[in-house]
Image (cartoon, rainbow, N blue to C red; front, side, top):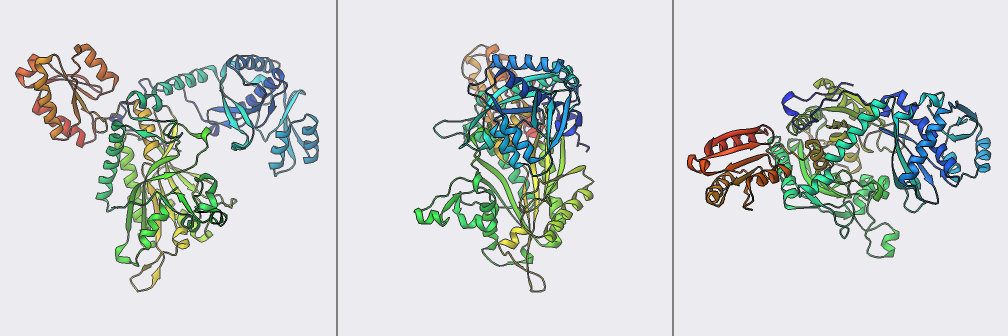
Length: 614
């Protein structure tokens, strides 16, 4: 799986030091999978030794470590984590064998009842395969588990293990069930890997978009509004608008038409699409006029996706093949009732704006339109300097029943995506089970400056919704035929994209995207009129410029501009007024010296138009 590489001149916002230690994800390393599976069992054994009343629930690996959920009468403290770690070291040093055992369901049930572990009984009921597998640490502790594990605890390196934090978690992710305590931990092959992991975590804290978003004055959250519902300040709103305008311009070049649809609709719309049946629990509750309407599921719901609305626009009149492809685009705000424990700044919210578009095409147009969409997404990724990505072919899992539509429709859609990536010669991998319930996708997985992966752009082929909504067009021979739908979103969502960009750039937005592009710093009151005049000239040609009129000393003016990560600072003293120049300092290139006003205006205008820095 080869990654697309960034061009050398597009990495100014990357980490200053090259990454010398590779940190594989758990899914990429069988060795790490065994280490983390076993470390989680060692941790659970340590917890139950120190806290006999603690009951274990689940303890899976995650991509950078593992966690275990416990039902314990008292909350775990930082002091407890230290004690648990010390107990883990003792267990590891005892060199206990890790023994796999297969038992019948009845035997497993008897053993669980004997140790009075009700959560394990519930887990057992969910296991469909037989025999049931258990893993023992010596002859002292065991848990239900499919593995894999190391053969002996001595294979774990205590200096490569760290207990990170404690968080609340509901059993089965259900707010109506018991609240548990989740201990997050990580384990690696070597202490050097652990040190590098910790370094990246510290760097992630420095880049945290929640912290930087507040410092840069981009967005806020309010308890009175509710969790997962960001409020955008003037600067943040400007940033959103810049991204929207950028994509709208790219879409106009490619023949898209902008539409606007409501924030609510009758629930019947989502019943027809299948979203209501598949994702009712993830939607906000239905608004019904009375109890009878509620009992019959008749009412209105907040919009959770835009496609059924765009379908209604297409279906509002009979279309001819001459009108296709029809490309309808919308920055549509949608709402998902995410669990409170799953919310995270801008990257996981309850109300977000998708850069959605739906293309209605003839079967003959499908391949070329799909390639055009991919070209748009690649263009967006390049301009945003997110060039380190993988392409995932997100296909259905034939064993799952979550998908709608015929095998024939799915095969045609998946083959269309395969043809596209093969035509482009694009490096890709398949993600079985990652498809939308109505069709397969081509997803663009971006790897950021901290080596984390995010799904951004997506393009999907859909034969099923046109069938469910009985869409038609008049073909050249006068017959009625079904169009094919292409769903696409180069950004994914504005909220998540902005959160990712803040962290990728560490708040240092490129010149074209910075809410304030230039700050002029007059040395004294005498230079103020000249400074304001130059700022007005900048604004007249579209440069977002402001003047610092605080009257502070020059050193403080510069520090404040640096702190706010202003891309271009222009110092104005007596010499600059006399020579009609500006003393330019940029965050990307440092001191550029004294430059005539006309020249710097031209340089900035050109750089902004080219999505470049000064």
